Image 1 (cartoon, rainbow, N blue to C red):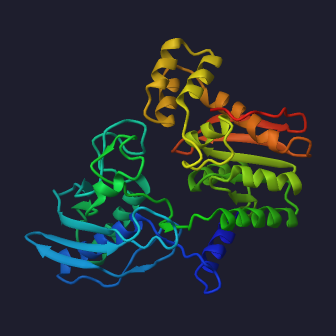
Image 2 (cartoon, rainbow, N blue to C red):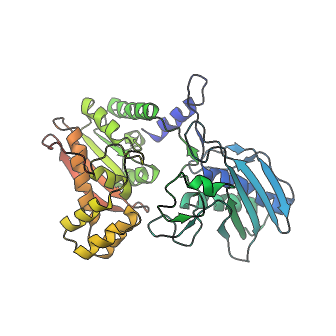
Image 3 (tube, helix red, strand yellow):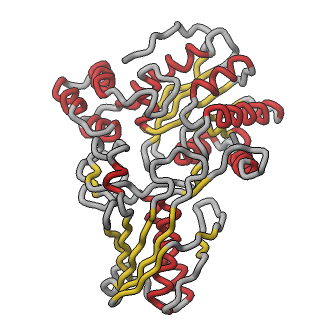
Length: 386
């Protein structure tokens, strides 16, 4: 699905004849609360509603649910509306407290009540840091900079994000298993929560393939998320309408391509999602299965890695950490993952005039694994690995 088509579908979901509404990420809510709090710290007045700029340009307005001022601080809270997504944080209060920071310190982040702290490697932020992901951090910095510029302030502030009751909510997530202790994570890459609906999302995938075919394109790229989409677009110089937002539904996209062939199909994703595809999973959502580190260890062995590396991979916290271990040992684990993922994908379109390519990217958009285009008409059927 193209980015433009994604936006159109998101807008359509707000119409009365559509059952689903989109919502806002914890990162967007935290940014709105922090912007309001910083404004009040400087002016004594809380803007309500408060507008923020999301990564792709929209400027939604958020109503404030709570405000308070203290000695050298201001606090604002926004109730998260996840739309019709079954999000564990729907209805949670996202609170930001802003205080003056040391001169020249810029924006520093702190975890308040209900926001977790990272304790293990392999996540987007290092151990010891608040579990506030990179994109929300950038949104928060930009909001602070906007207010600072408007009021001729330095922007040197401490931002503490809290989610009252967040530690209890985190028990319903994977956070503890991933080493995030004490609460939830502040997440989001676009600021927008698209309702998780198999039928709605898969229909949008079909629409994206149809649009690309109608335009006469011979190459499309299905991506699991915004980061891999940007990376694969840059890799191949693809036009926007060649980009399919397949999310976790790689099987849904490939089954449609089987009956509506496109000559070349790239499947792009991060190390975790592509490891699941290498395991034989065609639904990459966490409910369908998790990363099997034993599979990664076997692939490392197949690539010539020593037994000690396999042991370190088995003890890793995440797929990303396993890849880091392999890279430190001079082993290109990603290529083995890509080859195994190619087998899974090729089996779906076997017998059709379709070439499949697998591209595995790390969080920085660096290509860490690749299986080049190859015709899938001779791909043998594969059993799902567990």
